[in-house]
Amino acid sequence: MTDSVSVKNYLIGLQARIIAALEEVDGKHFITDSWDRPDGGGGISRVLEDGNVFERGGVNFSHVMGDKLPPSAAASRPELAGRKWEAMGVSLVLHPRNPYAPTVHMNVRFFTTSAEGQEPVWWFGGGMDLTPYYGFEEDAVHFHQTCKDVLAPFGDNLHPRFKKWCDEYFYLKHRKEARGVGGIFFDDFNELDFASSFAMMQSVGDAFIPAYRPVLEKRKDMSYGERERDFQAYRRGRYVEFNLVFDRGTLFGLQSGGRIESILMSMPPIVKWRYDWKPEAGSAEARLASDFLVHKEWV
Image (tube, rainbow, N blue to C red; front, side, top):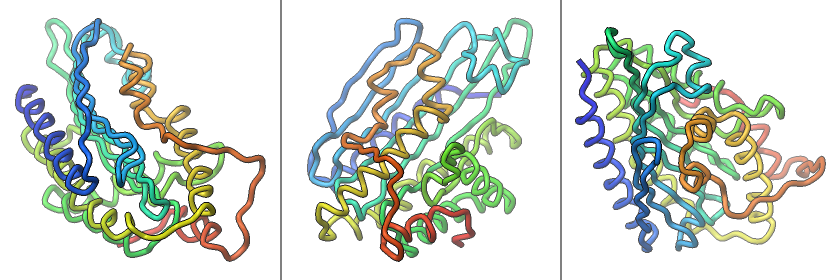
């Protein structure tokens, strides 16, 4: 038996807890932008721009529904085409100003469909991944160890699967390049009973601050110059390419008539593209690709 009310209450509380922790780090406050969706549902966007630590950060809660499954969702589950659907989740992207502090993404979500005379079909999804501009092995190890630890109570097989899924999902096929150092990713998860699946999703959501805040605290005050900022803007271009070309959440939002400001909140504020640029051999910029943007076992 599903319990959408409990899931929604958890997600709203998670958003508030994450915002409180991030405001402690930054010192500035996120604005609150509540919105309604004409086709059903709405959400709460919490956004910080031009902060002391975050150049842009957003932590969104949304709860939307409709009468017909959008193409991006129906394509992977054609047997559900035409069903009514309901989706809720918390999604965040944080772009720190300091190039040594990594961008991070986290999402936890619940999706259910219904049709008259049939049992509801539901699943959970989510995960988190780290996108550094300058790599630090200890940061990647801490992030991955935290992800591994929070999944352990739900089965030894989950972390290897979700880590591999993340590596394969956050991959720019046209560049043949990973987006970052990965983390965990899962979707269509309903192989445990509802209560256990929900508990697993909560464990992932609750792990975000312990996974990311220590990394951010180490890097946010490191000294940098124009070279590092320039490389950060160049690498942010890869983030934009992935989100607009491959990301299922972005495509679902656009195809389901979602709120554009909230969907595109993940875009970094300053980005650059260059023609066929290559980093200097042996440089820190070159080591990002050779040592960090590769699929490997960090823990």
